[in-house]
Image 1 (cartoon, rainbow, N blue to C red):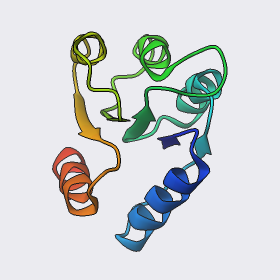
Image 2 (tube, rainbow, N blue to C red):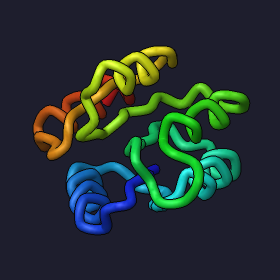
Image 3 (cartoon, one colour):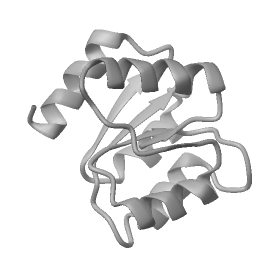
Length: 116
């Protein structure tokens, strides 16, 4: 599942994953939609941007998703300030990659998380 408000980044990530044999169950641009999508689809992995459209950012969406799912999350963010890192590190079962992401690094994380 991809939660990313930049359409170009989301499409690039979706194509990269699908070209490498992964099924993307959905994409959304808002934290509110991410919560609903995660609850109804039970994804194996969530790619989560921090800054999103709408009222709910990626960290807040993750707090709500963690109430019903422990799906691994790869945070993708250009935010690397200490406060953002501290907020991300409070969750279990997460990884972080900076944007713009490196394709091989992201695929390696994905493979490691999903055991493929």
